[in-house]
Every structure is written in structure tokens, then in C-alpha cells.
Image 1: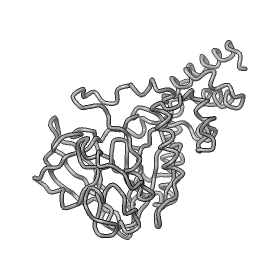
Image 2: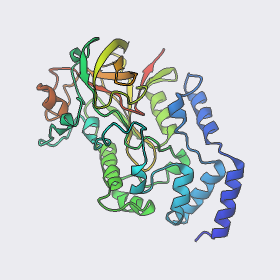
Image 3: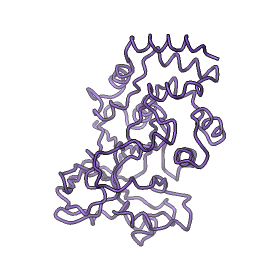
Image 4: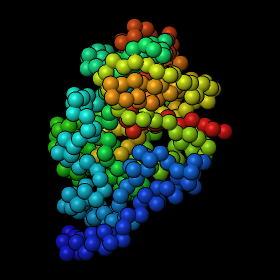
Length: 340
């Protein structure tokens, strides 16, 4: 067991040394991505842990002592280690209803249950729609764009790689982070692991990036170094019947697929990134009650391999391969496109 005085000393040294993680993130970005700097919201998700803190927590993990110092780890790493963290505000707008139940249906294109309900639409807004439904001057019911755990940070790859991340290790994972059975966090963990362990559909390339380094590596491997990243500006318009402003095609080359990355609810920041064939990307001005939101919309023009019971077909009344299916990119989600 780590001696408490030794732990306190390490924490003091780590605090005095300052955080170098942001610089490490920026350096890895500059070495691999042909952009001068990452988007500010993505940079803010860099692990706040210093190198000394990373070393200290890795040592505690190796000694199976991290659970004994969970409070310090959660606070310093800015991660969610208990159900208590889920009550933390993710948006300052108190007018909006509680964040909608996170539903992994929107990330899956296969293996959905036949009884998938249409209740998602009744919560407010359409999670899936046709391109023809998004016209300048028209109206559109917008679903909840918020990330249910938007505040959490990445862990450094060296630390994230030590965390059990598989259904076969879920008991060990929950024990380390003191996750109660049947809690919200337990449900989030199970749904995220299900998404990450689900077999990709035909033609899909995917990964679950458990660190920012993994995220960047996937993008570079699939698209190259010269890319651009697109994201929805904010969550304004959630649960509103908004007026659609300008609709601009920003990626229309169906022979070069973009990479879509969705933020998953988990203890620390994780992204489900995938590439599907024949996807167009649009920038859409959403005129919400308070202000204009510059949103990103992805439209899938090849749905032939999707499950016939996918929620989109239930909502829109068609089957696989018969229509294009569009959806918004939610808070902390992103689309990567080639520039060269």
C-alpha cells in the first residue's frame, strides 16, 4: 500500500511542477496533423495531469492501489469516477429539460432490437431525417445536442492503456472506479463497451479512441496528415423548433469518405470514430431562440448495409438503401475531412 505521506509528497511535487499535458497534446498534434493547432474545445480536453502525476498514478495502478486514492485521481485528472459526477452541470441554460437518456442506437447501423421504440422523437426533435427536410427558411425540430458528460478530459495514452476496457474486464473496471451496479455510470460503461465491441457493418472502418493520441492516429491512418476538423458550434436549438438558415455543402466527394467521431459517455473521454461509404457533410445555420448555432450535419447516401430495424427507417418509413439518412453532429462530436 502506498504510504500516505509519500503520496502527499508526490502530489505537492506534481502541483509545483505544473501541467505539461497540454503541451504534450499540442506537440503530438503538430507532429501529425497539418493544422497549426487543434480546435479550442478539443484542446481543452487534454489531460490536466503533469508527467509526475501520470507516473505516480501509473505506479498506484501497478500496485492495485488506485482505488484507494480515487478522489485525488478523479479531481486531478478531471474524470468522472462516480455517479455523483453525473449531476454536474453541462450547460448553463436552466430552461432546457434534463439531458436526454444517452442512447447508443444512434451510433449503430446493425444489430438493433426489433422493438426499438419511437420515443426518441417524442423527447423533442428528430434524431434522423432526410436531406430534403433541411431547407433554408424552413422549420426543423432539433433533438438534444448536448453531451451528457461534456466536461471530462482525456487520459494520457500511457495511463488509458492500463485501464481495463472490455466486457470481460468490466468487474475489474467498476471496482477500480467504485461504480455501483445499476447506476447511471454502470449503464454508460456497458453501453459504451457494447458500441466499442460491436462488429462493424460491411464497409465500415471504426475504432474506439481511448486517448487523444489514438484519435489522431486513426485520423492520420485513414485520411492522412492534411485534414480539417468540423464541429457543431454549441448546443443552442436543443429541443426547439428552429428556423433553418444557410445550408452549405462542405464535403460532397462521395468517393472520399470523412471520419465521424462521436463522444461516448464513460469515466474519461472516449471517441467512437468510424468511416462509412458515401457521406456528405453540410454546415447549417440553426436560428435558435437565443442565437444562431452553426451546426454540422452528416448525410449517409449508402444505407444498403444498415439493419432494416434501424431507428432511422422506423422514423422515416423506408428501408435500407432506399433513402439517404442525415443526422446532426452533437456537442463534442467532430467530422474530419481531407484537404489534399
